Image 1 (cartoon, rainbow, N blue to C red):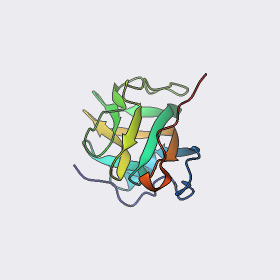
Image 2 (cartoon, rainbow, N blue to C red; image 1 turned 180 degrees about the horizontal axis):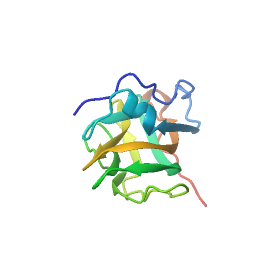
Image 3 (cartoon, rainbow, N blue to C red; image 1 turned 90 degrees about the vertical axis):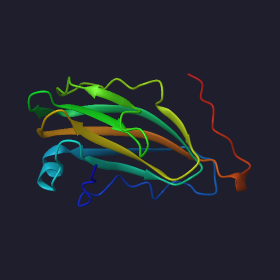
Length: 151
């Protein structure tokens, strides 16, 4: 599986290394740009890269501009070890659709990792998908731990 490396991933440069303050990041992937950059079926786009010792929570993945789908096309969202850890086989890709997150949408990263969008089963020509992620530095040097949230 290859990465479409000519696209810029979302910035997490402001991840507060050395503090355990949660930060929220938003990034949009324009599928047409990814296809122009060479995205093919079974390839992926790196959406975010996070350092080791990060508590990660995917808050929302939304189709903001409808995707033009080839027959059998679907989208997975995962990381470097599990292609569909966060979203599996999304096929309803109309504007305003919030993709269904798996139970694994919260993760503590022991090693640096990425959030990846992968096209499978067919081609996708266009569309925009928005990602909202909350990340917290939980480095051992801080004696920090994963935050808890209450609603």
